[in-house]
Structure formats: C-alpha cells, structure tokens
Length: 129
Image (tube, rainbow, N blue to C red; front, top):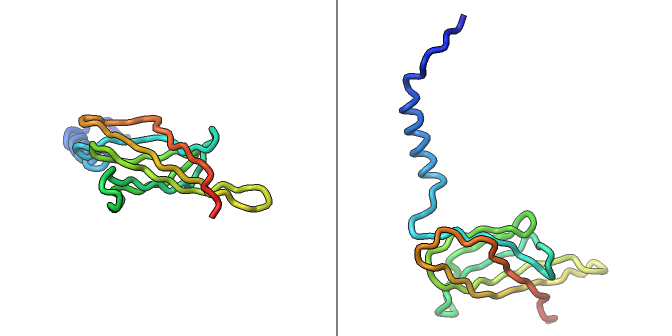
C-alpha cells in the first residue's frame, strides 16, 4: 500500500523551476519582442526572410534575421532604436513562374517597450529584372 506523504523537496523543486524558467524564457534586458505577419495583398505569406538593419549607416550589417512561419507570423527581439526591415520571399504564380516579393519598412522600438504586436510587413511584387 502506498501512502501519500508531503513532498519535502517541493520548495527546492519550485525554486529550481523558477531559475530555469527565468534563464530560458525571460526576455533579455532592454529588448522588445516584435511580433507580426508578412502579407501580400491581404494574404499571409510564409517563408519570407526578414533582415533588420540599423537605420544609419545604410551599409551596416543586419542586427537581426528572421523568417516568417505559419500564416506569415514572425517574432524578432530588438533593442530600442530605429531600424530598416527588409523582406524577401516568393509566391507561386501561374504557369509555374514564382513571383518575387519584397518589402522595406521603418520600425521604431521605443525605449522601455516590452512588446510590439501585430506589426505588418506589406510585401509587393519585385520589379522585373
């Protein structure tokens, strides 16, 4: 017969879980989670590559990279500042010819922001080469 006994290590277990949760899921200090969608003509587009650049200088390396997933959703973690977000993806077209989609938008992450939700990247068809 098994008897129910109080768990004497419960406080230690809870403390360990708190430490692990803080290390794994806590936002980095001073950053904001930017979450949104990539869309083309009001339709979500998946597998769009996102690059985030500082607004100046124009030749700078990206500070963050991302890719849109299910229903065009994406999430990026950024420090406060002004950024230029570029996006590039494809959409199957008629006759097996894919359409190249692009975007370039400014994003401002205000100081103290923890989240920016529903930020939409509006894609357009790239000009023909």
